[in-house]
Image (cartoon, rainbow, N blue to C red):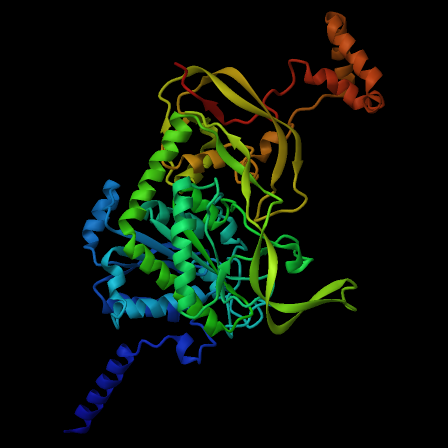
Length: 589
């Protein structure tokens, strides 16, 4: 054998070894590091190339130009899947599970856990059986730009990996506050992916901050009135007991997500449950009538423990859904139908705000002994944790009830000039049509008062609060207006976006702040003359003015407001000021 043949054989053997080496960066580092973006996507591309069951595809690009990728893992014919998606059909016997990793890209255990689990499904095939009745969609990294803002110092509370990504995107958006308003290009792409595939179950992986305790991983599911009641029951009574039992059997302590009633007081104040806001993933998917699981590993545990605890949760969830795929798909289909039946046809009020009861249960919590000491640095009492395990009896506040609700109209009407709202709604898969001709209708409208802007910007927007008055008015709906029927599966999302009292509505997020801005003003010498004429022509108005002078000292001593009293009642006043342009319409029989 000549030297050339020997070299070629050697190179072929090196390439073969490299191709068969499926060890992740996490594993090869001794479980203390995580792969960068290029290493991660290369691993997923190799999975695609190595298995007929895997298909890596892009679904968007980040502001810094990185591809957003998703891996489809299925035993189904992909052509048939595409045809079925186009037709809006779904087989009862197969469920689709979406895993979203790295929405906060410093919290990246889900990515490494997914890589190992996918290797066991696609390469070693020891877990291939999981694909018998489920399709899997895995987003390796959602916040790809934040993922590459890598540093040892990105999360002060977190124990590894050696370098981790940043919480927010390159544009400084927190993606897990953006599910409803969808300001970021990443979220817009994600919503299109979700609307296209309409997954049956969603897993969102995170690392939690907060108190210290023994549990490797915590979780949250929606089970209150913000989700279809049958779905909530299925999650809390069927899925959760299985999840807790099996994850514990796999060697990891697991507990519901730990939120302290009073963060300064620590566990002494008790822990709470809650109905998630739809700006968060679990709250958003509740509005989509889909069960979801929030995974939160504990920040102080070693990175290795956190990754394998996440893997245990993912694997356990797959096992449960594999055995209950038909039930899950049917549950979701019924939730879609029931939302329309209850809130559109029967006009049952939709709960939109929730409050936590002061009732509690006492539960045993696996924490650590801790004490409270006066801090010389902060000047206040501090909590000092020890390494001594202790079962603590804590108060668990988990009774959440609806605090406000809305009866949903048959249609929302959005004037043509507010088309940006409609464009944003399209990302959520919301359907609409345009009016063909001018139409006179009696509609319900809102007018705002006591409008107050937030002192600081939040997620790139100046939020606004207000009081509301509802009234009826006959209006001409011009041709070209956007008509949004509510008898569609997205009825809950439509309501939360368009009803002003909802905390994730367009108007509260500051999409429409210009409607609160007065654009025309009077000159005082002009208004003096007009006010005098108005009093002379209208004795009742004069009496009203004099009464207000007598009863309101502040008004009496404010020359501008005295003139403004008449301006607001004159034909010159802008009647569109503080008027919500979106209208409600319900057919009357």
